[in-house]
Image 1 (tube, rainbow, N blue to C red):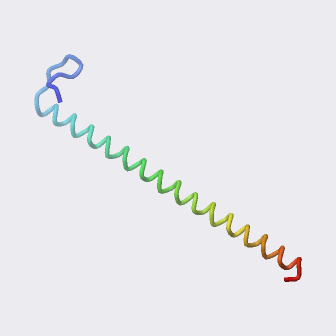
Image 2 (cartoon, rainbow, N blue to C red):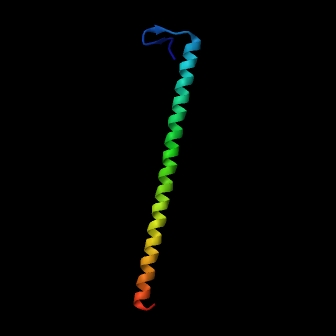
Length: 68
């Protein structure tokens, strides 16, 4: 990183602090993305299971109606 930020000269400790903040922010964003991806995946699985359950019920009712 440059020793300038917005035209201000920064010392190495400030640069290191800004880099650490940036890294923490990046890590938090990545964790949030992963958490949302897992939640979406779980929701999709629940919807798939619900659909399979509904399909099984429909098939069962259809077979009973046919006398199978």
